Length: 416
Ligand code: HEC
Image (cartoon, rainbow, N blue to C red):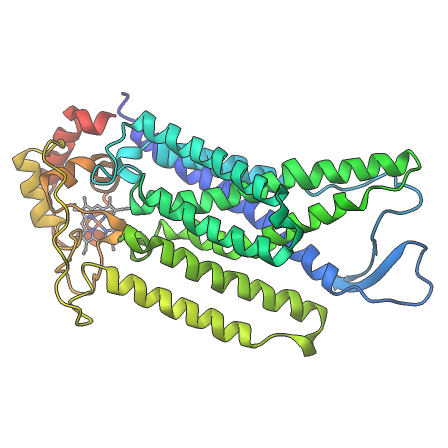
């Protein structure tokens, strides 16, 4: 491995994330925009034939009069903008990021040998197959008799997502489980656009051009899927951000409960806005209270399950962690010595450093096995850059960094 490769990995991760966040803003922004537009349509005098309603908007110094044709205009316009690439690129960039960070550096982020001792290539295959399978089962649900009833389908779909989050905790680390739950929901969203909404739209347009009436079931099916997309948007964003916050994933056992509460909160906030845009007077204000209660519950569930916080809130000491580390690679003694004195006060299951409640970013550096496991991250933070210790608060010396550098240059784990 070239010496610059880990540096390249970090830059690649940064650039992919930039792309991913940008495309996701464009996608979710346009999706919110159209939900709002739909809800703000009003009847007015002298509407064109086939127009269901009109919405007036002001933006950027001009006025827009937007009309919605429920089926299609009598004559197809020459220029028609399709909104699909925002969605596709969000998925493409997100999947690339998943491969780059989680499958490319899986010993660090994805694999927890105490859960399932997967090899990196196995972990990648399990993840990708799970995403594909997860979509197929959801799609079958949407095509089953359950789907005749929108509310029943929503409820079953909700239970299904929570179940998948549980299954992911049986395969991956907590962090890996939560990001895969988010990735599966996001895959469902883009696949809804790619496999259902777009083809149905194309069939309708083709029928209109041929002078036929489009089958109303196409529109109904698309509407059902796009409503799902709308309600899972906010929960997905939570899952995507969760990997930066170990307070959300450090105890994998509570992940299904967390996912349940976050979906309730996120979906209710969307529900409020969908109603509010339609008619301010009918806005369900109670939704905010229930959503806040769900987040409050999530906060407590996570805190009660956190090894570092149980004692603080009077639940007694945490049960001992499982020791499945008998034959894992270990860092050598000189490295352990440096890391124990300069890093482990913060990066431990129960940090002793003032103000640190949980191992930052889930990075544990308290045992020789953990130090070996996090080798690539230690390189990025303490050798390649001097980001850690923060502001060199624990006064790490250049000689100590050299010890790490020497180990990382020759270490098998670090070179994976
Ligand atoms: C004073 C407490 C403290 C000490 C000491 C400390 N860290 Fe950290 N570490 C943090 C915090 C806080 C973060 C989260 C930074 C952030 O949010 O960007 C972090 C994050 C990290 C990360 C994850 C970075 C990421 O973005 O994923 C690694 C790896 C890491 N530290 C390694 C180390 C190493 C190696 C040492 C010792 C050389 C060390 N830390 C010492 C507090 C500490």
